[in-house]
Structure formats: C-alpha cells, structure tokens
Length: 351
Image (cartoon, rainbow, N blue to C red; front, side, top):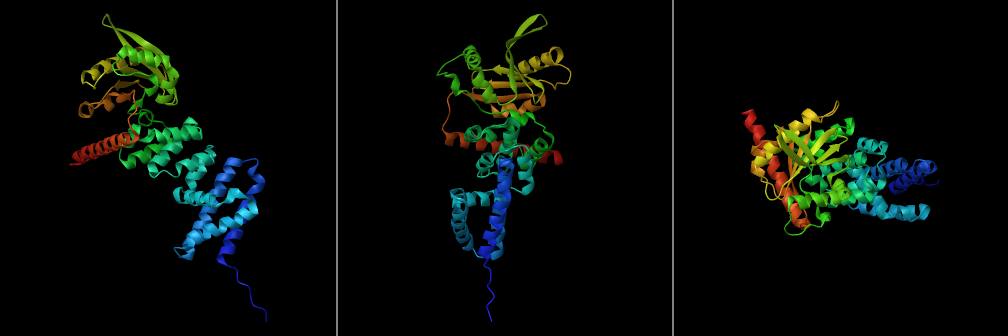
C-alpha cells in the first residue's frame, strides 16, 4: 500500500503566493500601481497568517528566507528576502481599507514603502494624506519627512483623538484646515541672510526668492501683493505680504517682525484682517487669516492672547537651520507642552 504524501505548510504557502503573483501578472502592465500595492499587501498578509497559525517564534525568520529563495528561482531578484519583508511590514502597518483608499487616489508603492517605516501612526496618516492632496513625488515626500513637517504643523500639537478626526475629515471630505497648512518654524535658510538684517531685508529676500518661499509655505499658496496699502481713518498702513490659499479659500496676511513676538502685534494684525474682510474678501471665501513671522515666539503670551480664536498664527522664521537633534528636541517639547495645555483647559471646563 502506497503511503499518502503529506503537503508541508511551507509548500502550501509557496503555492498560495505563486498563485497570487501569477494571478496579477497579466494585469500589471495596465494597472501597475494598483495591482502591485494590493499584491504586496496580500503576500504580506498571507505570510503573517502562516506565521501566526504555525505558533513557532523561529518559524517566521525561517519561512521568509526559504520562501524568498524559491520565489527568486521562479521570478527573479525582485522577490528577494528584502521585498518579502516590505510586504510583511505593509500588512502589519496598514489595514486594508486604508490601502484601498490610498490606491484609489493614486498613491504609489514607493510612497507607501517610505511612509510605512515611520514609527508614529498619526505621522504616517498625515504624510499619506498630504502626499495625496499635494501630489508629492517620493523625493519630495522624503524631504518633507526629513524637515519634520508633521511636527512643525499645528495639528501635531493637538490631542491624538483630534488629530485622527482632522485626518479622517481630510481623507473622506477633502477638508483641509489651517492647522494642517501652517507651520512653526518656517525654514528660510535659502534666503542667504546672515547675522543682522532688517524687516525690509527679509521682505526683499523673500520676494527675490519667491519660488523657494512658496515651496516652504506649502501647496496652494499664491502671491497677491507686497506692501498692501490700507487707508484707515486717513492713515496709511502697509501689510508686508498678502497671499491667497486656494484650498482654504482665504486671503493670508503675512507680517514680518524682528526679534521676539510682542503682544502689540495682535492688535496690528487684527486691524489688517478686519480691513481685508471688509474690502477685499469675495463671495465664497472664508475670513482672512494672519501669519506673524518672528525671529522667536513668546509661547505664554501667544496662549494668553488666544490668537487662534482671532484667526492669527505665529511662527518663528529660521534663516539658519539648527541641528536635526536640537530641532527634534525643541519640537517634541513644544508638542508636549501644547497637548498638556489643551488637556488642562479641557479639564478646567469640565469642573
């Protein structure tokens, strides 16, 4: 009597993954991005199921190495161990629904591969959504991550549940908020300013390097005017820079200041904003927002003045970049302090 040949779990896994690859090869040529992303997710998910079901800790390492060798023989170097580990990471990091959404909006595999290795889930969600709405290349995405864009946006300073809600609204309703747009600090090192310089020097340098300034401001900004003249009670006032943001549908008033933020800057910016609201705002637009760019912020004054309620943002402008470690420490501290302040205010209101 012949013995019944038993199929090993490893052979079943190889057969399943071979079937997935073969199933997708015929359509890869026409829908490269969508097919490839789903294929990688399915492979990672299938390997995960096999590892979990086997219940042997050392099995995971063994199966990836063994599977990669067999797939390389059949399909070439594109299916090496490194690729399979990308597949596993992807399946671990993203739920299927999020991948469906990302693929539908044409987020590339190289984008996803870059984002999925970020440690913080909220940062991953942020970069994924911003990639989609601002159409970043992979190179641009890496630049944004290296410049700590997420940590520099106001959204990062909110409690986690509020961050998740804003990102959900952005994903589902394409609803972009000022907290996702404005940053602190802004990096203006491309202006070439050194040592002592005046507000006019800064303004002139920005206008000379307008393209670089627009790139640092972010997608959606367009330049309107410099030294916007406003006549109020027969007195001339001049706003340094006036921009418009297409997604926010608002005029953006930017005032340049040397040194630390001062409380008096609030009244000046409010005057500009109310004038713009009265004389420049058009049908369908939202109320103008002000951005005060200072060499340094006074955080307690900014909080006490409740500038957000007045539609005013304050940010530092850095004409020379600090070390990445120093910047990380500074931003981490600012985020922690802001979240503690928000939670403290929320607790006070509940009492």
